[in-house]
Length: 372
Ligand SMILES: Cc1ncc(COP(=O)(O)O)c(C=O)c1O
Image 1: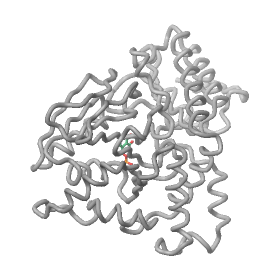
Image 2 (image 1 turned 180 degrees about the vertical axis):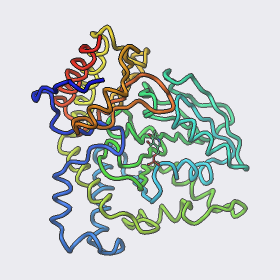
Image 3 (image 1 turned 90 degrees about the vertical axis):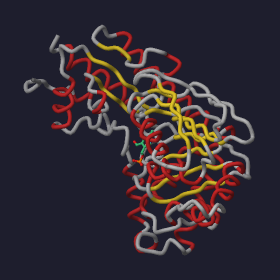
């Protein structure tokens, strides 16, 4: 369809990666990793060379999110998906209520529902709508998703819970970039291949004293069988020693640490401001162009991490995407496959620059307008 389309060199982004995860890993980080030579990759995660990197990540996240010193950054292998199960197995006492608005929040709900010894409720809105969640009578854990990666919906406020209830927030794709006071949450968890620009496979959970106490209390209940790899006391005691229970991917840790340092140089408020500016660019583009519309109609729920933009069916986005991928100019802007919409889903993660998003929007407009 675009065989004869000439891409203006001035509209080629400096980096083609606009995907929502795995996301853009700065090449400088890979160069820094290569420079560690014999002294990092291939060394033991139980020795200072790696433990110091884990400690830097933990301290860096405590600083970035400005959480009280009695919170703990707990880490392990398996990604956020493993935490879906770990939370249901080892944090929920009797009942969890899940607020769902898309593919990932539903997946989390389904994981909880599969655990036979807890009760699980779901409060849902259709995909494309947002909801914030609230405390629920009888529920000792409230589960919300900070940024629903499948649809581009973010929370506009956190539920408030009492001292006996755990507020668990899946911050996988919004963590670090979508506004959230982590000190008002009990388990704020994510995988690092999104805003934290690393590779997948790791999970990070910032846990309040209340959540740590709940994990220990439930672990003491020997009637629950929880596999060792999913056992919270193993994860917590290893994290207290700047380690993970089993062997982690060292490159993932190294690169994540580089990103945490980079984000701390700017600070939380500046990162939030940059994210909002990029979101304003994308959503105002969608509003200005008659052939585009923001998928999320309720402005308060529009994500500043993942923008979903519907396109007039006269132009098939798959043709645009395939052409740009073939030219190696733009990767990863397809909509979430199960939504089945004629849609671009564009990551606004921290390392994706405003300048590149400007070029991307102009390039996409030029391509679409050439067919209308
Ligand atoms: C909101 C959300 N939660 C959970 C996950 C699962 O993360 P992982 O694949 O690292 O387990 C994802 C992955 O994209 C996500 O976007």
